[in-house]
Length: 461
Image 1 (tube, rainbow, N blue to C red):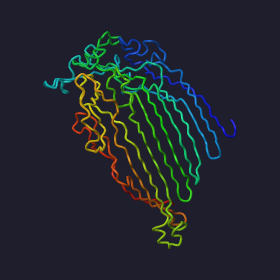
Image 2 (tube, rainbow, N blue to C red):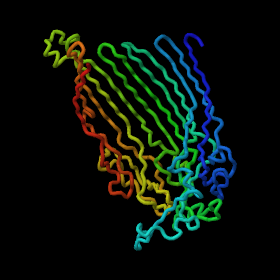
Image 3 (cartoon, rainbow, N blue to C red):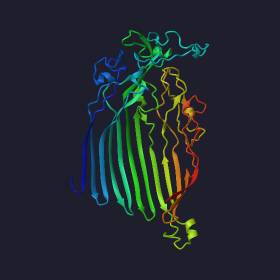
């Protein structure tokens, strides 16, 4: 725009239709078209287009604008800003929780026995007669994909200021934001309410007809891929950097941030109350500092001290450099769960009730949080504990390297490196046990690697 202001503006368009199966051997347990009475929909039953074959609609609105700004306030200060929209390519075929394992082309059933009685399922006897036919299929797990044509969409923006300081030092401070919408997350699309009785008999949908056969099958859970998850990141980031001069260079970066999410991997308790799962993300590291440097020690030939040393003294004591790397970070969130499934919902993720403060003034590996603050949820109820309310230990780690380069002949050089990982031997504590009812509840029983020293020699010729 002028000598101080630069704008960078662009627009990208993407078309990323969902995958189809070559022979249309997939089907979707459609919870969207008629939620009161969902049915299995085979590929191609509703038309031969991409949406009819993939059983998901196509997103034709993937416009991705970009905007960048750089403004020179003066010769030593630059203001930068940027924003953009980005899309994630999602592939839904190829095993795992995909539509190819649904009836009528495939079927996955669960066989269980009463533990109080002699075993009725013995491998050498094989399956009972007609056990694997659709007419007798029971407790079938179905897969359901959200049919909406929406793609995970990421909105990113930032604003930062760079300032040149005396001594060749660069300081940068900025705000960075990131909002992800339409994130795919896995829930139970056929949940059972917290009540007594057989879980499958209590579910929202207990049976469905397999298209093209007339056979009715009883249902277990439905693996539902829902497209309404989200995450939001807001952070202050700062960096200070000195380029190599006078025997020293360093860089240090610090971030203070918060990440909220609905739909990450720490489990859903009540499938009918998704907003209760809003919580700090499992990746929410509030504070993170990393600093590194290379410092040329001022001893030896050509340096401040020892320029008159003899060859032997210089070979032993001169020409060394030290390179530390320091990492300090706060702990990640942890989800407290209850052993078993007192709610009798089959979700596998019950959280306890909170009956007191769980933070401890002086946590230890024997009790990282107040374990008496949690009690198991009563049968056929949900616990009131929020998701990811406890934090794992943080990390303080110093890696240290000492190295010396020297010339053996005109064409041969060598480098000696002495390295110490976790030089202070500070324990990198693992996460505590977070399962109420486990004998180790609240205890930390693992840690990262202890100090590790190594010596290396490199010859270049």
